[in-house]
Length: 497
Image (tube, rainbow, N blue to C red; front, side):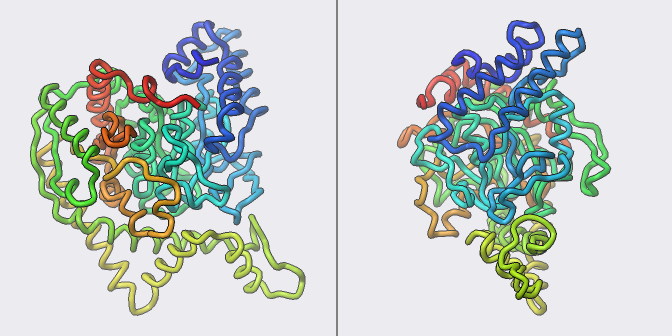
């Protein structure tokens, strides 16, 4: 079992296709791993044992019939519990949807099934994707497999922890302000936020519609690329979906190189609040890029200093609108409906019982920012800042092919450390938020361990919209160089559970 769960997704798929392993054997190995360690980690909210084994048997039957298998056929995956899944629960980490069984699959879920990817179950997350630590889940926090007293990032900490604890070789996350990349950074895994609109949001429970983006999570750059290719592409059911070809991400991951590329380093992505070990590993990564043949260009993007403020007006405003649909009348939880209360009272009681503190905080922030007399001063001004950030990116990409930065200012912090300090929590997304505001593509990949605490550090790579392949080209080159010199930090050094 140990040998199977340590395989990459690409290796697993190849062994299934050749008959060296069966999809059922692979699925059973990962289900056994979940049973053995997830009581400690709490990466999963729901494990679909029977459904996963049925999918695996279908893959084995296809191979026996001589049918051609896709590049990820039979490979297990952990799915963030924000995508609807027909017949099994979708809670979004909230009590307000506890027990809700969707009657349909999200487009992303359909594409995974069509590619014969085996969905093991649904992963834990900050409620409605609002958080940077997975402590805001209504079902309890997830631990970081490197140190179970530390956070695994958020909002997609369940997906990142499932990868880092070898409970799944692939996972899906969503990224509104860094919720794929920040968890990847603090768990030593790979996470990609595709270009906004590149992956369908149909069936993905909305938090902030102009920022939300689903994407691939994995333990290697190639595995992330293979998953990216499966889930991306135009969807007529999503009005924000881009009708454009998927960039050649797998080809880029197989042929990684930075020779002759111009790589930008933004001066706003360092300074006060950045951990010394994070900056040390980032500076080493920049030197490595030089050695690999890249030209390093210093960039000044002054509007990036305003990104956090703009984000925490735009995202709550959109969340206050999106979450209005959870009224206790149509689906999900219903509280206080005893025949004596009005619909308005039932809605109020349901929201009071069903929404957690962080969700309530953001709804109130957003409702205030959108209220009469304040709309232009707050939401309108934030959108103007968003335009300035987009323009700074446009100017930067006239000078460089990609931008690099630390993914997060610090390594994983202790569970509970920032629970009573929302501003400290929000600062975890300092480096990731500008990309969401502009709609660009970005990746986080491991770049070593911080010397002061021996916890993973992430390198962020940012590319222009629709140039997602550049992430994989650079990421694969950096990953190969790191592995050649120091070994893969996750596989070699992650503590055993």
